[in-house]
Every structure is written in structure tokens, then in C-alpha cells.
Amino acid sequence: MRPLQRNLMKIDEVILGVDTHLNVHVGVLISDSGKCLGTLSVTTDAAGYLKLITWARSFGPLHRAGVEGTGTYGAGLARVLRAHEIQVLEVNRPDRATRRFRGKSDPTDAENAARAVLSGMATAVPKEQSGAAEAMRSVSITRRSAVKAKTQAINQLRALLISAPQDVRQKLWKENTSDCVTGCSRLRSLGSTPLLQTLTATLVLLAKRWLALEDEIKALDAMLDSLTTQYAPRLRRRFGVGPQTAAVLVAVAGDNPERLKSESSLAALCGVSPLQASSGKTVRHRLNRGGDRSANNALWTIAMVRMRSDPRTRAYVDRRTKEGMSKKEIHRCLKRYLVREVYPLILEDLAASAQHS
Image (tube, rainbow, N blue to C red; front, side, top):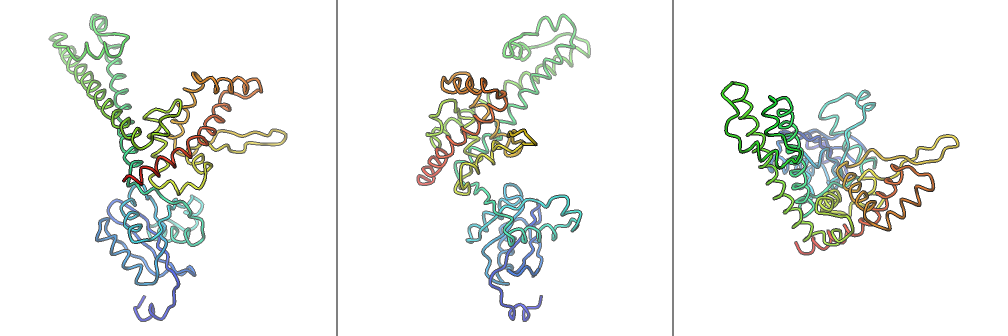
């Protein structure tokens, strides 16, 4: 568009849509009437972000932007947009029917993001990723991968022992995991054959890997305990809520929990909002298999602890069982009730941590 034509147009507001990638972001600008004004590709650095904002504002007032992947490739751009007082809305990628109808390209995806904001379909406010909740999320992700790697290490070690010669298996196999790993880590030599020499080296490496990951998990657990005790004390005081589950729930809420309008929003985010599954004369709800699965698992863990040790929860389970509800349905109800309980606590904890920061 020529500068003269642009100045003659009266635009009350322009809306930016961005398709994000690792090295390049593609932005498309539309007017408040839905007209496409232009396309710009920028690099994923501070200079590129400022270039995109300056370009967009040269067409008119910019107050809203739809960005794909605000938690991954678009995180840096989202922070810069918020710093320039531009409202950022999370935009999901178009469904398959829309992609088949309109085709697939970066400018097309960016334009779809802008039009989703204009139509009001994009309403999700992304996480700010700038405070205690983001710190807990980082530690939780690292811990989860360490636990997975530790499990893989012991499974591989035991698999090697199962197929090892009988005398080696009898010498090193222990039911207790720590005893088995300790014995393997202290191996010097099982024999002079190529098989035994290789088996010695692999068992020692796997055992040392397991021990290193155990120390790593202990350090991460201490970090989560410190973070949740300091920034989520109200949540930690609830029965059955530990450092890991508290950190996951706070991280899902994010450092700007005001984006969650009600407890039902948090329930949907955690995948515990009941979904209708009625048909004919049958009236029932089913489990929600969407949402954040780590948060769903955290609620499941808390509910399981209470079902085993909390008298009030056990009485509830007995009553619901007599009413004919299945164990899965009871667990679904408990997770939904837990969201109702923890939602105000998370808001209070994060509000208090924001005041201290």
C-alpha cells in the first residue's frame, strides 16, 4: 500500500495477527472493517519485534494482537507486545476443515489469527511467564524428565540382568532398587570375554546414571518445596497437597491468574469439567479428556491421597458408591470439588507473591 493511500484512509483500529516460528515471525495486519492491510516477516529478536510493532502502528492505533504459540515460539513477542500496552490473545491454529478450505501458509495462518481476534473467537489471555508460577513450571518440567529418565535407566538395567548369565544375575539381582543399583555401580569386572566386559561397562554406566538422576531429583524436590512454601503457603496447607502437586497447579494458573474468570475456567483448563454424555433416557456426564494432563494428574493424586487417608473424603466415597456411582465417576467429582477448593487459594497466593515481588 502506498503511503498517500494509507494516510487518506481513516482507520479506528488495526489488528495484528502473527504466525510464530523459531527464526521468523509472519505478521498480517487487518483493519477494523476486516480489510487486509499488509504482511511483514521479521526476525525473532528484539529488533524484529520492535520493527513489527512500528510497522503495524504506522497504519493506525494498535490495541489488540492475536498470536499463535504464546507459550513457545511466540513467548518473546508476547512479552514485548504487553510491554507496549498491546493486549495479547492466544489463538489456536485453525481446524482441519478451515485449512482444507483456505489452504495452508504462514500469511494465511497470521490472517486467520487477526480475524479470530476481530470476530471475538479468540478470547484466551496467555500466561505472562514472568514470576513464581513460571519458576515452578520450569522446575516441574525438569523434574518430570528426570523421573522419566530414571525409570528408563532402572528398567534397562534390570532387562540386562534378566538376560545375563545365571551367575551374574544371582550375584547382582536385588528386589530393592537401591541395593541393585548400588551393587552394579561397584562392579569391577565380571569376566574377560567380550560379552562380560561389555556387560560390566553397561551395568556400571546405567547404575551411575540412575544415582546421578536420583541426586538431581532430590535437588529439584528441594527447590519445589522452597518455592511452594514461599509463594503458595495457603495451597500447601491443604490436606494431600505436596510440593509437586502445588507447583503444577500454580503453574497452570500462571502468573496472571486474573485471566481465569471463575473456578469453572480452571476446571476446564485442568480437564476436570464434566461433559454431557446423555442419550435417550440416559442422563450422565463423562470424564473430560482435554485440558492440561499434568494438572489433571496433580488433582488425581490429591484425590487419591484423600480417598485413602481423609475421613471426610472416605465417607463421601462410601455414600457415592452406595448410590451406584463407579470409581471413575467418584474420582471425577472429587477432582471437580478440589478445583473449587484450590481456586481461591491459588488466587490469594499469587496475589500475595505479586505484591512482594
